[in-house]
Length: 75
Image 1 (cartoon, rainbow, N blue to C red):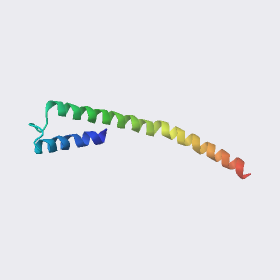
Image 2: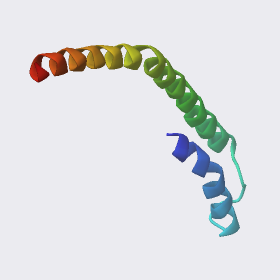
Image 3: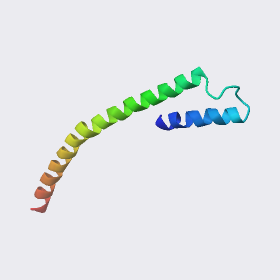
Protein backbone atom coordinates (compact mmCIF):
# COMPACT_ATOMS: atom_id res chain seq x y z
CA UNK A 1 0.00 0.00 0.00
CA UNK A 2 2.81 2.37 0.78
CA UNK A 3 4.25 1.63 -2.65
CA UNK A 4 0.95 2.45 -4.32
CA UNK A 5 0.80 5.73 -2.43
CA UNK A 6 4.37 6.54 -3.42
CA UNK A 7 3.70 5.96 -7.11
CA UNK A 8 0.34 7.75 -7.18
CA UNK A 9 1.64 11.30 -7.65
CA UNK A 10 4.35 10.47 -10.25
CA UNK A 11 1.77 8.41 -12.15
CA UNK A 12 -0.67 11.30 -12.27
CA UNK A 13 2.09 13.71 -13.37
CA UNK A 14 3.10 11.32 -16.14
CA UNK A 15 -0.51 11.07 -17.32
CA UNK A 16 -0.68 14.87 -17.42
CA UNK A 17 2.57 15.14 -19.39
CA UNK A 18 1.34 12.57 -21.91
CA UNK A 19 -1.83 14.60 -22.44
CA UNK A 20 -4.25 12.11 -20.89
CA UNK A 21 -5.35 14.53 -18.15
CA UNK A 22 -6.16 18.21 -18.11
CA UNK A 23 -4.95 18.84 -14.53
CA UNK A 24 -1.87 17.48 -12.81
CA UNK A 25 -3.63 16.58 -9.56
CA UNK A 26 -7.35 16.68 -9.00
CA UNK A 27 -9.10 16.80 -5.66
CA UNK A 28 -9.95 13.10 -6.11
CA UNK A 29 -6.27 12.21 -6.72
CA UNK A 30 -5.25 13.99 -3.54
CA UNK A 31 -7.96 12.21 -1.54
CA UNK A 32 -6.85 8.82 -2.90
CA UNK A 33 -3.22 9.58 -2.04
CA UNK A 34 -4.04 10.71 1.49
CA UNK A 35 -6.24 7.63 2.03
CA UNK A 36 -3.49 5.27 0.87
CA UNK A 37 -0.85 7.09 2.93
CA UNK A 38 -3.04 7.12 6.06
CA UNK A 39 -3.85 3.42 5.82
CA UNK A 40 -0.16 2.66 5.28
CA UNK A 41 0.84 4.61 8.39
CA UNK A 42 -1.80 2.85 10.49
CA UNK A 43 -0.66 -0.57 9.25
CA UNK A 44 2.98 0.26 9.96
CA UNK A 45 2.11 1.30 13.52
CA UNK A 46 0.15 -1.94 14.06
CA UNK A 47 3.02 -4.00 12.62
CA UNK A 48 5.52 -2.22 14.88
CA UNK A 49 3.38 -2.95 17.94
CA UNK A 50 3.11 -6.62 16.96
CA UNK A 51 6.86 -6.82 16.37
CA UNK A 52 7.68 -5.17 19.69
CA UNK A 53 5.23 -7.10 21.87
CA UNK A 54 3.95 -10.33 20.38
CA UNK A 55 6.99 -11.42 18.38
CA UNK A 56 9.23 -11.02 21.43
CA UNK A 57 7.00 -13.32 23.51
CA UNK A 58 6.91 -15.92 20.73
CA UNK A 59 10.71 -15.77 20.35
CA UNK A 60 11.24 -16.25 24.09
CA UNK A 61 8.85 -19.24 24.14
CA UNK A 62 10.54 -20.87 21.14
CA UNK A 63 13.98 -20.28 22.65
CA UNK A 64 13.03 -21.84 25.99
CA UNK A 65 11.43 -24.85 24.26
CA UNK A 66 14.51 -25.27 22.09
CA UNK A 67 16.79 -25.18 25.14
CA UNK A 68 14.65 -27.81 26.88
CA UNK A 69 14.63 -30.01 23.77
CA UNK A 70 18.41 -29.76 23.36
CA UNK A 71 19.00 -30.69 27.03
CA UNK A 72 16.76 -33.75 26.72
CA UNK A 73 18.16 -34.95 23.41
CA UNK A 74 21.84 -34.43 24.31
CA UNK A 75 21.71 -36.44 27.54
